[in-house]
Length: 102
Image (cartoon, rainbow, N blue to C red):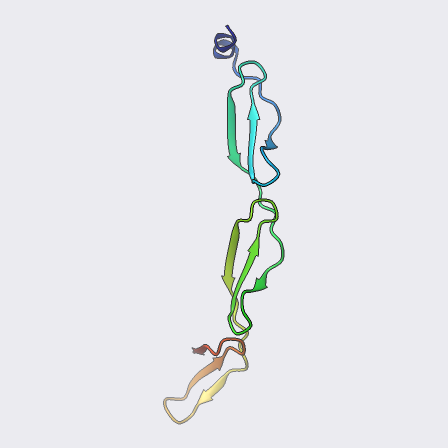
């Protein structure tokens, strides 16, 4: 009987809430027939930090579910001119030693 009621009038859902304290999945449930909907919630990320001392990869972790994201952020020095080859400009990352040419 309840399923027919929701089919005719539509579901009456509760508010979105996190299913578990260790996940970022939100759910809501119909108060009549208990039909459930889920969606990806918002991650709560901590601070970015370098993985290793001589590496430029930074990661941050979601405090709730443990999902990690990363980026690479080099720390380049001043532009220098390569006089003995082709007069190209270059700079070197002080963390990992990567050379970038202009």
